[in-house]
Image (cartoon, rainbow, N blue to C red):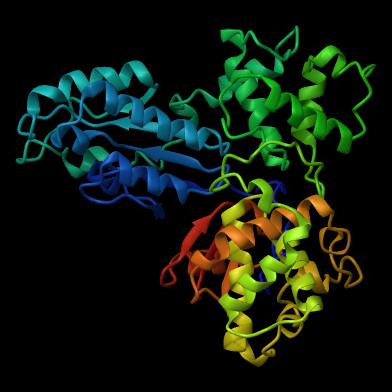
Length: 437
């Protein structure tokens, strides 16, 4: 849990769905409270905008128009649009793609029509701006054409990725989902949803990510989930013979993350790169040297022990996120943040700062289970990412908080999340936003 605005369990039901807008000038004109669009944005920049969208949001998106003007080929543009939408679907978002108008005075005008067609084939278009009343530039619609798109009821438009259809598909699989190969085409979307739920619970499906293939990596993730939730018996009807029935899927979707999930043995796709032999508690002394170099002073063995435990309990299983959490702790020590003290124990034990360490009223002020009962496997992973990734972390960051609005409930300050995002050099890594606020 994170600071005075502490982080609630990330699967807490949202009181209201957040609506975000991403894209280029067409999206910027659509307005909306959370409008991340930028004039002239190409799909590479829009992908970065998509990374800032929290899990479970409704997303209105435009994109591809400026890539046509830049000379990109229609199929390549359509593929990029689909990749961005797929990345948002993997975060359980509803995506509504708004297709740019063909216009009459664009750079590379002859490719506007073919690109629009390619995008229409690749994804479901929720709203097509073609036929709107154009501005004199022959590129943009009159502003009235953009008004109301974001405020319209999402249920009146077809999501670009058919998320609801995917959910229904998974829930209605009469024969369940069986591990392959082969990988039946009619089960791809259902398997993607299965993989999304496994990732949400902390079970990595491997470096291939959410690919719709129920292969060995996904099987290992399912087995780890079964172990933690008492469903590992081969006679369990919901998971018999490697098949997951509709009831098993429902149980999975209703599950809440455990403090220290059983490792899957897969490399998380969000990790910067495999840690290899670095992920071993035998490398603790080497990690301590890296920490001392980053901090600029020596620390005790107890200090190092606390740092590893706090990092493990405050971050998800994401190598760069873990390294960034460790960096924030050490930055606070070096700067004697808020005069809590210039040592690792002093900063970690400060009231209402690192509640995975100091506990909450709800749990009798006990440290989290992840802090008290960290496994050797988790310790090794943290040690490995400290060695590999700590030295490259930002030395000005002093805070971090959840980047998922649904993590904020009564008594917490979701405004701090937005303050953090706007702080100098802020960056979202994994499920967390880091900055100087």
